[in-house]
Length: 212
Image (cartoon, rainbow, N blue to C red):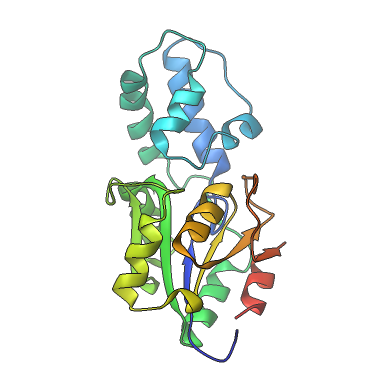
């Protein structure tokens, strides 16, 4: 694995960044607007991974609230507080730099809205480290569809055998499988592998780095 440059495609929330508290705060502020009680952070992070619309849909399920109206309230709240408590996971900043120095091609494929993705990556000074950043709204199809992965591979001119997807959710693993590439499941994030079988499982970003 370490003998040639690889294309390493990362998920964002739950893989590179811990955004749970900021996501939960924005969702609960939206719920407060509609006179709903707050949800705990664990419940809200369990809703993460399939894009902002589904996050908000899950957050108001069982009520008569219109999802489009809830989105109109939630999105600007989150944008205004997007990095209040969001952090890179331990080892991510140093690790990405080392992977880049080793000649690997780095990319991001996330269902998070593109504007939010760019703001966060820029805030942490790593936006320019990625050859491609595909996100919700910038790309028409979300994971677990394989289209984001295939598009990044085409742009990078990297074959399936040299491509890896790193993520914390079944959406990442399924998109990798359907694109014909290998995957790493990180256990420290929010998601679950579901019925997917990752190529490797890592408990920390340092373990991810050790594979390359």
